[in-house]
Amino acid sequence: MLDFYYTCKSEIIYTVVLLLILLIIRAIIILTVKKIGKKSGTSEARAILMGRYVTVTLILIALLIEAFILGADTQDITLLFSSVFAVIGIALFAIWSILSNVTSGVIMFFSFPYKVGDKIKIHDKDYPVEAIIEDIRAFQLILREDNGNLVTYPNNLILQKAVTLVQKDALDDTSIL
Image (cartoon, rainbow, N blue to C red; front, side, top):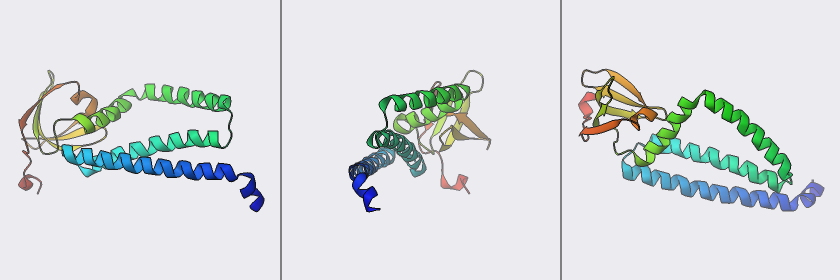
């Protein structure tokens, strides 16, 4: 065991330093996302979802850096990543609408001017919607129309359509019960 420690001492130290740095970066980014979420009035669940996206991205970056720490050849890593990205690219092309909705959800977290409880009107030629936002999720908005119908509206479409704020904080506590 001591032979292993002395043989790989520098790699172990670099790995621990990498983990500490990435944990600090993750904490800073998650706190920033929560502050932005609180400031813009979004739910804590959406901030947690953004935190998960950040965590996954940092884990992927850590794996890449760790491969270099452990002495992997640049050519091997390039081959691995190009193969993985080719497969991911083909898979994402096949499910581009889901990726589009998730990306729109991230954009909406940081710059969507409406929040849960606002009554909005979506100016859609085929199906105009006037409803209260009940929830903003990763893939869609959950809207409640005046007649009680529940409408799910994809995030990528909400960013493409004109939206009017009809009433701020239209959701009252009695309508939930």
